[in-house]
Amino acid sequence: MRAVRGAHTAPELTVRRLLHRMGYRFRLHAKDLPGRPDIVFRRRRKAVEVRGCFWHRHPDPACRNAMLPRTRSAWWAEKLDRNVERDARNLQRLRQGGWSVHVIWECQLKGPSLKEGLTAFLGPVRTPNRPHG
Image 1 (cartoon, rainbow, N blue to C red):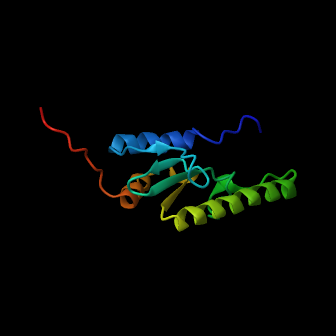
Image 2: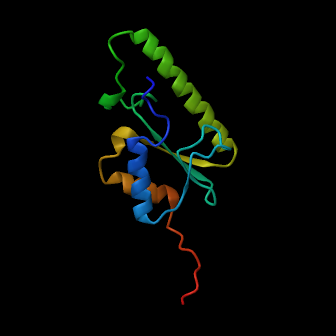
Image 3: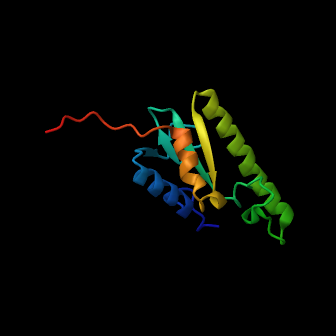
């Protein structure tokens, strides 16, 4: 369990690379926000959470990554349920603070809908006002 990362995971890096290629600029793991969201757009007051299907118990029954292990099932269920409760608390606190949050599940990373969903959530890319020289 020591090797399990909380930040800079492969799914998170995939989303960050896509956002950057699309022209969005963002901050990472804002310590002053509940749950330290993975990707933060402060001016837009929007955050993107990239969740692993197993660790955060993706509720989609079609998701094969969210299955509980057969050994020590009760222990795993209790542990992962605490993660789900914590996620719900943090999401509620963020929304009460005026933030919009978009949750991306690990199994949703493959497919064209990821880019479309991010664009719909974030809106158009804002270009900085730079003088042309």
